[in-house]
Length: 392
Ligand SMILES: *Cc1c(COP(=O)(O)O)cnc(C)c1O
Image (cartoon, rainbow, N blue to C red; front, side):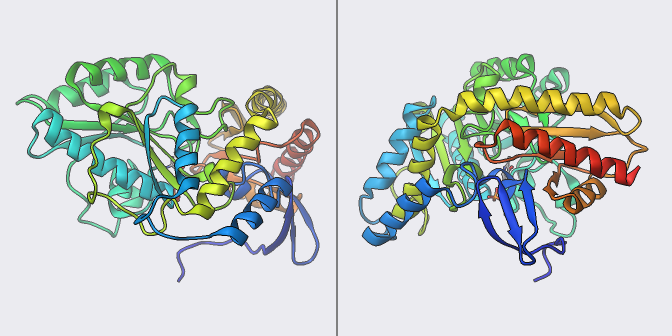
């Protein structure tokens, strides 16, 4: 169906940070399947590990114990604040699980009949009905009304507005089950969370036993230079979701919870494909390789290089570029109002052999594989500058 406005580009092969189209043209990939291909394309270790898993066992069912799933859950628990994990197949599906968990928490812990979930404006949580309702962008709701009941929206990083909304919602007693929020808004414009705002969120949620749930689907699994985006805020959530980068290109999603938020009982939530041996092998290998190759530290070094190069670009072209922002290898170049749109820059960059993705109308997003090297970063920013010049 016509669900995508696709670029006229057909990619047929990839290796590391590079992809090739049918005509043999080579592109530096600063999209990585939108923050998915953590280890780059066709990584030899991931490839071998997945081939081995395919020869052994691909899919059974959650009717049975799945050792690869238990190992991946243990790996996530060992590297996060969570104690238990549920597996599914995508980011939206992980958020759906989180939304069901939130409602159960509201009923069970706060005694709420009709629970509300608070989410941020300009957020992105996925396209299934509840996840898109949680997404605080009206353009994604239009044409699909009625939306799911029980969501209210606050402006991101605005403590006073959040407190006012919470007070309004709880004027007649407990109503709010959870707050669902990204530590850094990815698709909404690469907006990093403000630690002071998040610390206040944590206090307010603790006071009322409201679940604080982080959507780590884009910023999680090492992309921030830490395992999880929340580590950059100094605030732990009660639960968080992950997906994109977790499988390195194999579909997988996860909801991870602390013990006190472990509310699902057998039969209450499920997925046919979720947590299958193949996808979990991918997740395990990605986590092992991030560690083996020291990629968290590497991302922090690349963050400094990329941020500096983008800031230089902003200084050299003040009439086009407003600023650069982001964490780790999720960076955004903010374009001025009078400058070309992000979509135009992305198109011009493609002609220069660089793949980029917009994050809203005026932000160009760079989310390359975590294995990107300094020479690739220099090349990417050079090509981005050429694209800007071609438009100006
Ligand atoms: C991409 C994304 C989602 C949705 O993930 P899908 O796998 O496309 O369903 C949810 N939340 C965030 C923060 C995302 O970036």
